[in-house]
Length: 454
Image 1 (cartoon, rainbow, N blue to C red):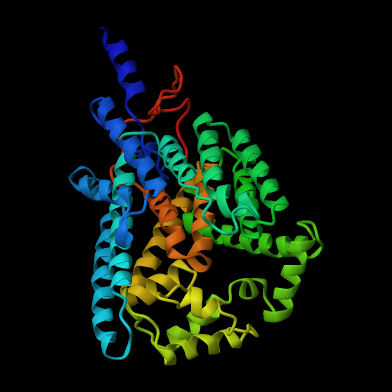
Image 2: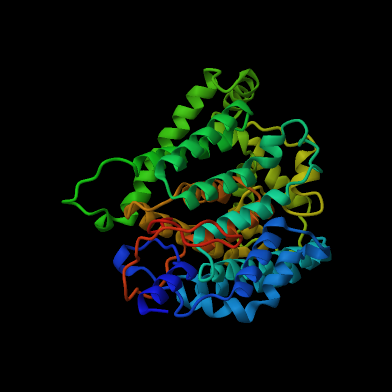
C-alpha cells in the first residue's frame, strides 16, 4: 500500500474530535486507528446510559458500565478544560450531602434510601460524563449524540400518567429531537439543521409544549444567525465568546416576550392561552406562575442557606418556610402538590440549581455554577467560530432552561451529554483538518464530509 493510500485510509478510520476551537487549534485525532471493538464498547455503553435502565437505590445499568470502565475514561479528563475540576467538585458535593444529612439528623427525618439514591445518582452522572467525554476520541461528536439519542428514545416510557394525554410533550419530545438533530449534524448541511429545528418547533407549537417551543425557537434563530453572510475582513474566530453569550441572552429575552405574546394571542391554542393568562394573572409573571417552585427555593435558601443534605426530609418549620415563599406569589400551596410531590419523602425543587443546593449544600451550588460556566463557555466559543450545530445549540439552551426550571433527575442525561460535547480540548493540533468524502455510514459512525462543527 502506498503512503498516500495509507494516509487516506487512516483519515477515514480516525475520528476527529469536535470542539469549539478554531481550525488551527483542533485536537489531533489518535495516532493509530481505533479498533472496531473499542467503537462497539463506546456505542453499547452510550445507548445504555441513554436508556437509563433503573436498578435499586439510584443505580442504573449505564452508570454501572461507566463506573466499571473508569480506567478507560479517567485519562480523558485531563485532556479537556474544566473536566477534572468538575469531577472533583462533584466528589466534594457527594461528601457534603452525606455530612449535611448527619448534621440534620437530630431535628429532621432521615431517609436512608434517599441518601443512597441521591449520592449514587450524582456519582453515576459524573462517571457517565467521563465515559461520554472519552467517546469523543473514538467517534465523531455527531455519532456520539445519535447513539446517545437512540438510547434516550429506547428509554421513553409510557408509565407517565400524562403520556397518553400528550405523547409528544410527555414522552418523545426530547429524545426524538436529539436523534433528528444528530442526523442533521451527520449530514453536515446547515440548511438541513434549520429545517429540522423549524419542523420540531412547529410540532411543539401545536402540541401545547410551551417550553419546548421556546427552546426550539431560540435554537432555530441561532442556527439561522450562523447562516448569515460574513465578511472576510473580520474573521469569526476573533469574536468574543463572552460577547456571544450576552447576545444569546438578549435574544432569549426577545424570544420570551415574543413567545408570551404569541401564546396570549392564542397562536398555540386556546388551552395554552387560558393556562398562560391564568398564571400571568396569579403571579404577574409567566415564569413564576408556571414554576412556583422557584419561590419555594428562594424562601428555603433564605431559611437555611447551607442546604439540607442528600437524605434529609423537611421538618414542619422548613415546610412552612417553603409554603410562605409560594404564597408570596399568590400560589396556593395547600393543594397536595407541595406535600406529595415536592416534599413527600424527598426534596424536589424542580430545578438543577435548587436540587443540587438542597441535597449537597454550597458545594452543590458550586457544582451547578461550574456546569453552567463550562457549557456556556463551550457554546460561546463554538458560536463565535460559526461552528455550533443545531444539536449542540438545542442541548445548551435546554440545559440553561433545566438549570432553573427542571428537576435534576430529569436533567441528568441531558447534563451528561451536553457537558461531554461542549468541553473544549486543551491540546492544540499539529495539522489542520482535511476535507474528505465519506464512503457511506457505518454502524458505529465515520467522520463526515466536511470539517465538523459543534
